[in-house]
Amino acid sequence: MIELLRERPGVTIGELAKAARRSERTVYRWLSEISRCLRMVVSCEDGGYFIADGSVVRQVDLNPQELLALRLSLTSGPFTDGSPVKKHAESAWLKIREGVSWEDAEAARDLAQARAVGIIAPPADLPPGLVETLNRAIDSHHRLRAVYRSQKSHRVGEYTLEPYAMAFRRHSWYVVGCCREHEKVIQLKLARFVSAVDTGEDFEPPKDFSLERYFALSWEAWAGGEPVRVRVRFAPEVAQMISEAKRHPSQVVHPEPDGGVILEVTVAGIEEIAAWIMGYGKHAVVLEPKRLRDHVLEHARGVVAGYRGEEGAGSPEPSARQLARS
Image 1: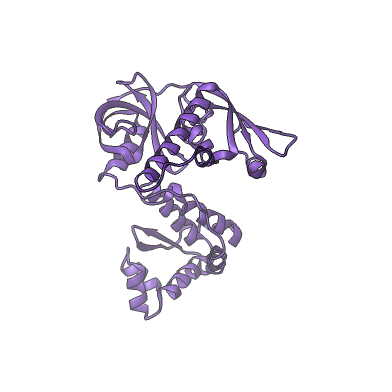
Image 2: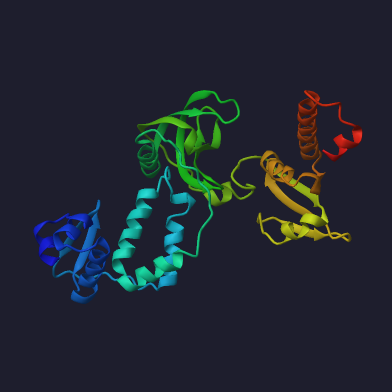
């Protein structure tokens, strides 16, 4: 193994396994033992392995449970296909994996069979080179000329953007920066970029900009709206579900005599929290603000109207009592 690594720098695991007439699993174990027992550095780059005699071995002192936590983190939603940091996460894990003993790595793998992280991030079909362009522009403080598809209008427009940062919120990655056309800081979903070109023009990000502050009032992913104080009454059937989870830093839950609860929170805008509230159907009633109450009521009427039209196609007109239940 050592001779192969010296004679063929960059040799792959498959090539090592074939030359040694052993399984890839055995080759991985031998590589670990070369590092741990013979105190040689075995490094990996682009799938190829190298050995450096006489150097100091970098060992990672992590137990199987710590390795499990790292592995779950580095393979969860923020690091899947389409992530701007996926390749760095994979590289980091390879370095960690090579720095621990084979036994600990195998123990962590066994532990992972009974654990999972359920952060959903659907893979995005991004234009070639987009992630690299965005990362480079953010790191170099370069303006971008971006072609982007709007969420609301579905129209494609061209924008000049000063990208400050990237953030993973809920299920998706977003670019946050100042848009010349909008004359304010906005967030753009990575999956909606049609293209982006680094103009090479420098800009100076505001020294007081903070992603944490920008998303401070966000209910889940949307930020930048006016602060709104929201109060919602939840029925006893879902009160425990509401009380047991901390969904927002400003959240306060007030118990009611009948077993229900009132959720009080201050968020940016009403649309995002409205969608969440409507998911509880008849078990949630907006108390304030009035515009949020009206917004939810309008959508509820639209749902009833949709079912009413569907039933009307081949069924008698529903009664008032049926509509009330809907």
